[in-house]
Amino acid sequence: MSLYHLLLVAIIQGITEFLPISSSGHLILLPNLTGLQDQGQVIDVAVHVGTLFAVILYFRRDVASAFFGLGRLIRGRVDTPGAQLAFLLIIATIPVILVGLILKLTGLDDAMRSTAVIGWTMLIFGLFLYWTDQKGGTECTADSWTIGHAIQMGLWQAVALIPGTSRSGITISGARMLGYGRSDAARLSMLMSIPTIIASGALLGAEVAMTADAAAARDGAIAAVFAFASALLALTLMMRLLRSVSFTPYVLYRIVLGVILLAVAYS
Image: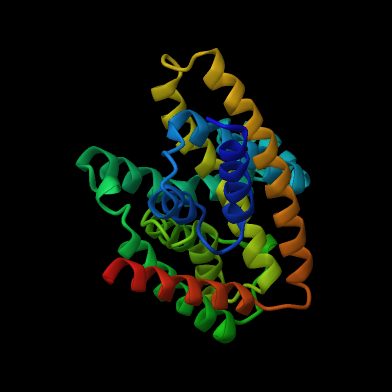
């Protein structure tokens, strides 16, 4: 792959992974609309690793708490905030793993990678994000996350396997419906992304580990670095803006892009 193509894929993945505008949808659209070759699974794994390190760095205190709590959880103890967070993150990740395996084994994941599907999901779930953001309450906080809420948000996260839905967008919508404020909804959504990215990265990584050569490894390393930098920047800006700005700018972007994609798909 050319350096230009690598940077384009990495920056798109990094910026869109945590913003509620769908990273998978944008990466599918890149070859569909530009004629560029598909980046392949090696680069997919690399950019996901880059964004994973970005979210871990940004939420390092929560991640450290959950990591050390995992040890207590393994011993059957859920008696600390860290152990509870680790437990709830595992619960929230189960639906997306199960549904993801079903889609992959049945081949439905490839069947949904069309411009028309992405156009509809961009539009529909963009409007859904607007509705939940306007109607959502603020009575719940991330520190009071419950198992019932983790299950519900986990089910919403599984819906994001449809390209164009946006994992962050749909889980933030789910959290807003449950009464979490914007910042707390985004925080939970970002923390939920960590085990999800690890699971998907492990699945893809197992498939490409035996086929990657030195050139592919070099390209992957470049893509990972730029995906990390762009993801960290996008995440930092979004979390700061949420103190004073709603999700409406992202909704408008989704609506405009969705309409354009539907026009292209049905023209």
